[in-house]
Length: 287
Image 1 (spheres, helix red, strand yellow):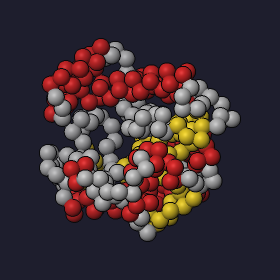
Image 2 (cartoon, rainbow, N blue to C red):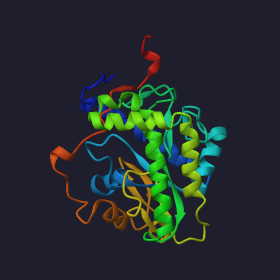
Image 3 (cartoon, rainbow, N blue to C red):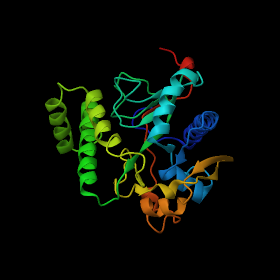
Image 4 (cartoon, one colour):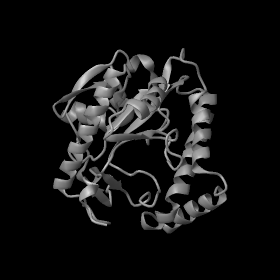
């Protein structure tokens, strides 16, 4: 167990990576069995290319799925998914606070400071982001929609994290979060995120030439890319397993991280997400 405000130990980090790989392996098999397409993305894709696995100091795992596959996955997993896991999204959990899904392992706990109070499942997870149909990156109408969607996500985040934001940021940020949370208190986080989904997911038909990932931390223009960049998919080695990646994964990495993505960052930039509490088997924890 990692206690509040401790740095995650190397031993715990390694065990966390093993658990993430277990979840990813089972997710991969489920997708293949049900003809669902996914791609490694973000730091996970970078790790596959640069390290053939996790970035050494990283503690999460990210994938993207085209919106149609993403929606099918959520529906199918609730009826056909392995009992060891649950899929958590705004479609499955009224208390969920993010515009993308998490596949969580039951019987585990992963707490960070801002969301440790949320009355929702908080097991160890991989992140699953939807890829929505999009227009070219500089389309004005799309930019307006994307900025509104980002604002709605921020509101949902503030409503969820305001309670503990004083522990994690400046007094100014704390006051802003508290003010936003109070202003939007009459509107549920679930409704706000459903608005966000409607703005982005319904803006284009599947004959568009681009995909857009609005849920990620990176700027939406960086993640508005031609569908031909993703298809046909390739596979890369990741911790001894082989997983799907965008066909032109070099372009994706350069777009997100810049031309020097193969270079290691300075040591002061090598940070984990600093969870405050990790439990790998909650059945062994006494109340």
